[in-house]
Image (cartoon, rainbow, N blue to C red; front, side, top):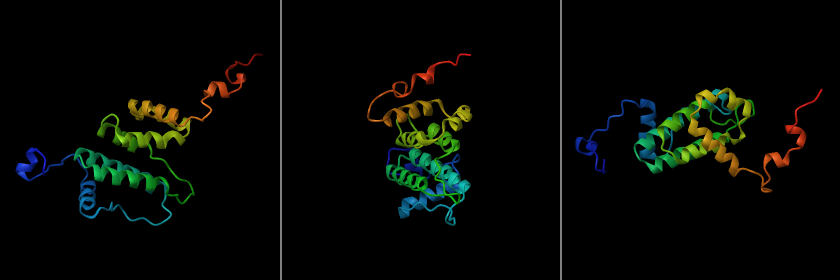
Length: 173
């Protein structure tokens, strides 16, 4: 309400496109410096973890819309905390397709949340990525390629030079 915005004069911010639960969580974050999400029992189920990523992605986009750097940083920390959470099956999960589909249209190019999503997907199996390629934003694939290039072995050899020639030779009868 301190910026040069119409909402300052009206003393009213309208957020008709935002989930009321996300807005309530954002307001709680502003006043308490805590992100209060749904309480769950430990260990969490896989779907609870994936839903947490979705909720946090929506919260990040709202924080981006409101130009709140502190809130964005708190959400990034929360996403990273969820990434270490072991589900009841003993597995840690990366965000699914939906959080990426929320983050990318809701953030500008170069957003650190986009970079985080791409970095988190460097461990996702290629067949999963290919199965969901139509649901993922084009910019995500560029960011994912850049993330993979940062994560290359220190020997700087290309995958082709590390592989054996057989990898590229067609089988003869």
